[in-house]
Image (tube, rainbow, N blue to C red):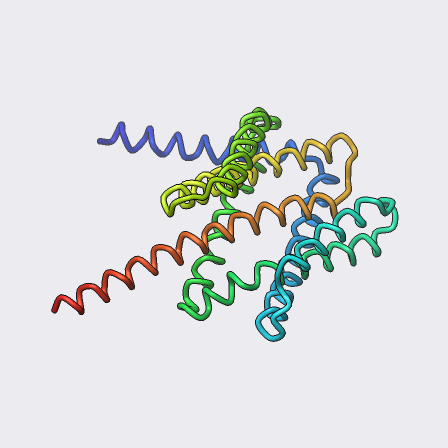
Length: 247
């Protein structure tokens, strides 16, 4: 038993030492860049929350806001990198429109059970922190090999969605798409974080573009988590109703 505990403590201390060592490989300039990226991400999430609130208050979310969001992102990419204020404003606008587009799902969660929204957001935030943190303290380029695998998975997901839009889908196939998409975008959290670090080491300090990448991952995971939680809550509610009818 003593040997087991000594081995475990050595492994834990080794992991902590290696993690700190890997983190120190990130230069101060890149560390400052990451701080800007995550701060901008927080602002984008706050802006999307405002967008979701505007949908609940004014019922503005839908296809138009989604198209406007895509257009705003395209506009942002067309603006030169040195025009930071303009690009930051466009990112906040895109995040607000994205929040309005996701608003119907958020409104449904609030109407069904407000705790679902809180639990879903907190769970997504914890997952994001864990996966992104793991990518930061990992060895450089360790997870970049996932890029091809994740791209293939995303292509399969898009083909599945295209096929179901034509031939229709059952509840089972829809939930498979949701879980598969959740797995893909959790992987992208790790991959994108390491790619941002690697790009920053090579001089790409576009924190607004990098914040947009992580924002997209966060929203994609949150949407799927909410759908799964709503489905599970709905199934439990149906089971309770059936039991009451039998009794």
